[in-house]
Image (cartoon, rainbow, N blue to C red; front, side, top):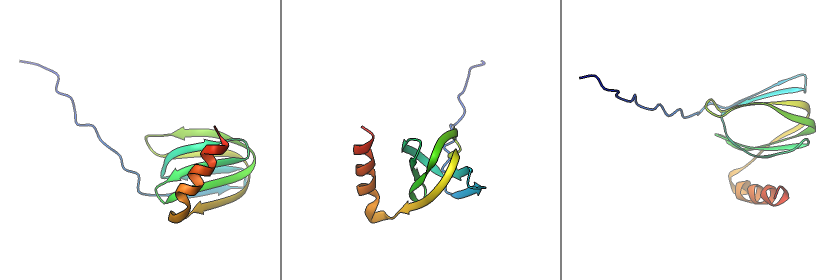
Length: 100
């Protein structure tokens, strides 16, 4: 008797986090869990190491790979800053109010 037996689904848990900037114009980030909000001047990303705020000019989301947790941003990068554990909810609430 032949029948289809589904394979186990593989849940990938991204634990590695890296940030690579090339000439302040191209930014590749791994370990991204979620893109909370973005516009041409600011991105708010939830990473495995906490929330990351990317600020710049003419920012564009070039690539989003949710299965691998990779985000690529193009534009002029001015600032990268992490929001520590105590400020995460405050930052998320602040940005969610801005982008409603």
